[in-house]
Structure formats: structure tokens, C-alpha cells
Image (tube, rainbow, N blue to C red):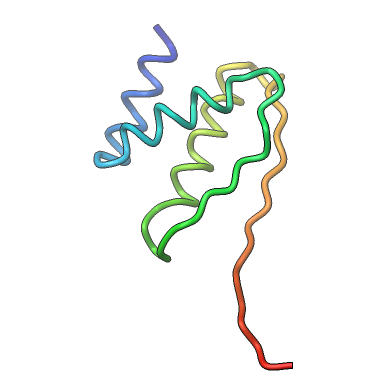
Amino acid sequence: TIMIAIHTKLSDAFPERQPQIKRLRQLLSIRWCPPLFIYGLPGTGKTSVVRAVLQDLKNESKGSFIYAYADCIETHSVR
């Protein structure tokens, strides 16, 4: 099916991220998905994986999948 084909493409693009891709798809497919907070070390592919999964879900739904995405960075400064 289409979902399997898209999931396979994502798995090919992110070969070590299959469990995370599967879980993200499950969570984001819930009608009223709670806000998700994804964190980890810089440069590990978090942003790329999340954006790819969101785009695939939007493509699958023919545009009816609506989401908000905020990219944040933690900074530390002396006051």
C-alpha cells in the first residue's frame, strides 16, 4: 500500500531510525495528537526525520493533514 511504500522510502533515507519513524507516524496519526517534544544531541537527525514524516503524512492525506511545527534552540546566558 501507499503507507508501506512511503514508510519504506523513509526507512531507506533514515536507515537507523525505523523505530522512531514508526512511533512518530503512530502518534501523529491520532486525530487530536498531543504536542510532541523531541530532543536530543545536535546533528542526530531529529529535525530531518520529523519533517520527513510530517510531509509524508500530509502527502498521504492529500493536504488534509494540518500541523504546526516549531523549531527551538536552548540557549544559556548570564543575566
